[in-house]
Amino acid sequence: MTEATQVPLAKGSAAIPEATHRIPPTSREEIDAALSALRHHADGWARLAIDDRIQILEELITSTHRVAERWVVEACRAKGIDFQSATAGEEWLGGPSVTLRNLQLLARSLREIREHGAPQLPKKPFVRPNGQVVAPVFPTDRWDALAFGGFSAEVWMDPSVTPSGLKDTMGVFYKEPNPKGKVALVLGAGNVSSIGPMDTLYKLFAEGEVVLLKMNPVNEYLGPIFDEAFRELVRRGYLRVVYGGAAEGDYLCRHPEVDSIHITGSDKSHDAIVWGVGPEGEERKRRREPRNTKPITSELGNVSPILVVPGPWTQADLDYQAVNLASSLTNNAGFNCNATRVILTHAQWAQRAGLIEAIKRAFAHAPERKPYYPGAEERHARFVAAHPSAFQFGPKGEGRVPWTLITDLDANEANDICFQVEAWCGVTSETPVSAADPVEYVRRAVELMNDTMWGTLSCSILVHPKTMKDPKMARVIDEAIADLRFGSVAINQWAGVCYAIVCTPWGAFPGHELHDIRSGRGFVHNSYLFDRAQKAVVRGPWKVAPKPAWFVTNKNSNGIGRALTDFNARPGVGSFAKVLANALRG
Image (cartoon, rainbow, N blue to C red; front, side):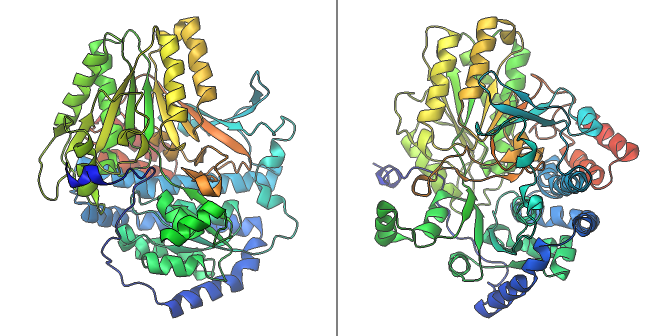
């Protein structure tokens, strides 16, 4: 038996070793001074006029765009990506581009709050048959409609929200007559470079709190760039950026000047903050006696599943969706909380084998990626030890993690590592679900996704448009969307789209208790500033043309990412034309 198989199964997101520091940790004296300065300005920020907030956002758009290329250059260098390659597009799209979109959408919402009292929805909300209020949020404007033809998104509200009361749940902070200043600690993520800045923006502009952002050691090299991108917030005393690892994080979490905490990371880190570590922490958790009682929100990962609905797929369909599935793992070298970890298929579907073969071909042609996140090799070895028949694609050996596909998981083995542990590297899996017909299959698959697989952050459904013309299948798919207990549900798209469009809330399905936190609590992004959202539903075309920028086969992702960054900084006919021209070359 290998060492990997002897390790007890610890369910949840990956426990990541601390990365080697590139910037010296901030001293406790400097941390104290930063928090003191933030406290001094907290009331001023909470009560700042909305016109001043809009002006700050406009200045942040300019300064963020100014550092965008340097931001991408540094991220590519750290991740082992050729800045001129197509793969560099990931860093444009997942870094300055989406951050600029966030800034633009926040500025729009604040203008609408000033003029109308609340952000204005692009379409009228409606009520589902069960009484649940649904707010259409995407496309947000004509540019979205042109750039993302066939895409739409809705936010499904908590059942307590009524149609007449929906407006009251939007921009709640801006309805407070005399808000009190608060200091928030944001513990940044190390994988996608926009996470730290966008979490910071949410705390500032949605919740009205000044922010101390602690950079993750994995990407702390971006801290000085964020300082420059958000320099107007720094200059006014509303933001500070600090550095360090677990020791500095613990000091900050327990600091008396910190009022609230937001973490994007693992459930292990969350529990260390709330309960402590070791046997003493486990005992506190058992007794439900947290050592840290500050309000804490979190986004903590997921074993992200994709439900493949059987249908009349052609070979072209199989090949396209195989690339779609492979891209949802290869993006960012597999270090995404929404990377596909389990593909559910109908065991009796005649084209199941054809889809698996097409996925293998897609992985075989995917470029090798540097496993830049600490511990990736060990985590990969653990999954392969549990499933030695796994298919591996690409170079092997020290410093490498080949793309890995584990097939034929037993859907009845609830404790399989693939169902219970977020791999946090280039590993995905497939499980056939046996059922007499597709309707029964979809219902069993939804049950498996809800009740067996770890996490509630995001999931996807792939369903052929001809399948949806069958009334029975259309009904069961609608039921599946309603029944899935995930914060984001994507139809025919990788759930990463739910992160990228920004207007939808991003976070776990509500309801997790501190002692069973799973994918976390609370939302970020959420540019319409809903206070009681339940989940987002994003729908896209069966096939997207031109080829999506995030597809591993896109040859001009770099050009698209750069052009989209320029467009998000200065939307207009000219900048949009450059996006379209680059998309056509993909």
